[in-house]
Each structure stands twice: as structure tokens, then as C-alpha cells.
Image (tube, rainbow, N blue to C red; front, side, top):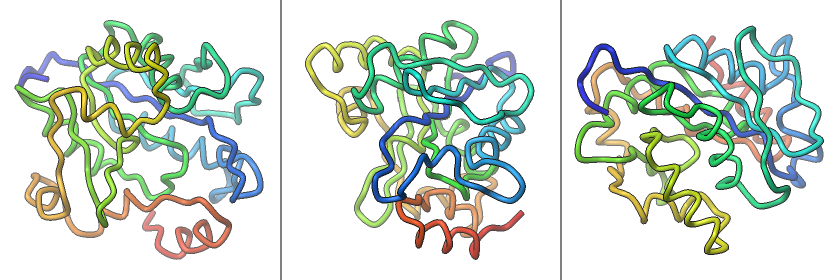
Length: 211
């Protein structure tokens, strides 16, 4: 991504996954007066100026989404987040130079965090991936859309997990200190990386939510 005011940023929201510990689809979880999927999609549509694509599993019932959000479907079921990322990148095509990729378990995702990571995606990097508590977050990260070829290659090799992608491209890995050095970010914005896997996580997220 170059410092070009004409450049367009898009976003991909991945809804897949079995959510066994949550006991039901995370996309359908109630967040305020709407679904969690709708809430995160709304954050993304208010932040990027290009297309926002929500990717679901084959046959998945997608909750009501904000106007203008596009829907794509995994080409092959049960093949992990890389397959969903591939579907999202293919749907966006050449309409954006970079995308913010989010999983649906990030209820505290915020516009400041998304903007800061997209702005940090400068040459020579293909991705900006945050790391917190020793864990990388490839599904709360910014990527060039040109990584599609690498995503497809990994899938052909039988790789399904998104954590493999940053190792195959030019990735800028940013920890808390790096993130807070980015323009526009304050400590509270890093709550964006809080993900929910259980009902207890969801309850904790609701307590931490800043409208």
C-alpha cells in the first residue's frame, strides 16, 4: 500500500468456524440490539472506503447486515480461515489495494485500530499483523490484496490455518509498544484484539465495550 490518496481500502469479515466452546454461531450472538456479525460489519463499513465482504460457510444463514455489505461463501466447506480469506479476496478482486481482515469473534474491534493498521501497511510489507500475549492475530490484521496468490498456494499445500500466512509473505509484526507508536492509537484501542470463544468471554467483552 502506497501513500496514495486514491488508494482504496476494503475489509473482509470471516464468519466461519464451528464455535463449539461458544455453544452456537458467533455470528448470531446478540450484541446490543443486533447480531455480533452486524456490529463488526458496521465498524468496518464506517472505517474503510472500499468494499466490505462478509464470508460465510456453505449453507450458513447470514444475519442481517448493514446496507452495502457483500456476501461471499467458502468454495469448499470446513477448510479453515484461509479458505474464507481466499473467498473474500476473490470477491474484492481489484477494487481495493489493501484489506483489513477480521474474524467475527472481535466484538471490541474499533475504527481507530483498523485505520492505524491499514496506514501502517507501507512498502515493502504485504501485511501488518499484531501480536499480543505471545500470540499473533492474523485475523485482526491488514493485508495487501495481492497476497491472494500465496493464500491459494497454501491451500493447495493443504494448509488451513491463517497463522501460516504471515510467514510466507513480507509481514510487519507489531506488538503493543509498536501499536501505541502508530498515529491515532491509545491503549484503550488495543481492546480490539480481545476475542470471544466462550459465553464468559462474551460477558467480559460486554463489560469492556466502549460505544
